[in-house]
Length: 167
Image 1 (cartoon, one colour):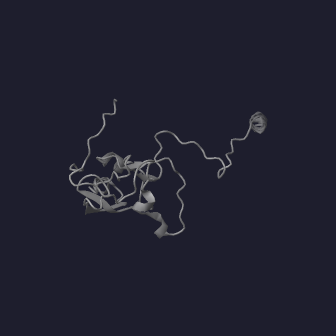
Image 2 (image 1 turned 135 degrees about the vertical axis):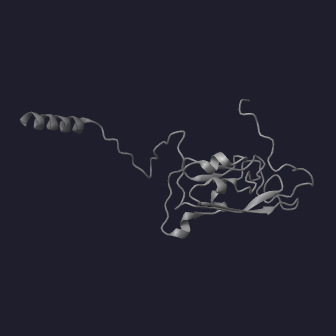
Image 3 (image 1 turned 90 degrees about the horizontal axis):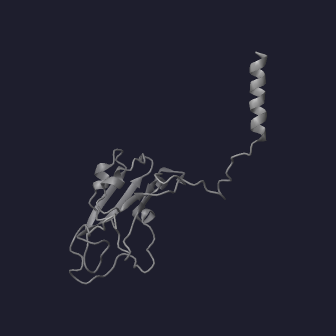
């Protein structure tokens, strides 16, 4: 019994000599792993158009039924995304979301991604519903905000040509 108490005290004294691993949270942010799934982001193209085409495949793939998508038609005078449709309403209920990444896998245009932001806090249920405006990333440099006016016939495909990831 005395031997076990001595081993326990030795462990305690060894730990007292080590440096603490405390991170001062608001000032220092802990780095996350590359495959971490955090807050959702709706991405844009380089010209500022939204990638989301309102197909609602992400909502269909969501096992928790946390995503709601409502599509509307694009016009040449008011264009939000390439192709025929865009997501006029895009909402994610973060209280239901299980951060599985199925929405990210189902999206044909890679519009929805799970970023590395882990600061998700809200004080009531209404703040837990993230709208399209909250999810959209900022307009890239050189791009224009949506809606954009485009010449007729410029965007004829709902899903634009994808780059080869090997290039």
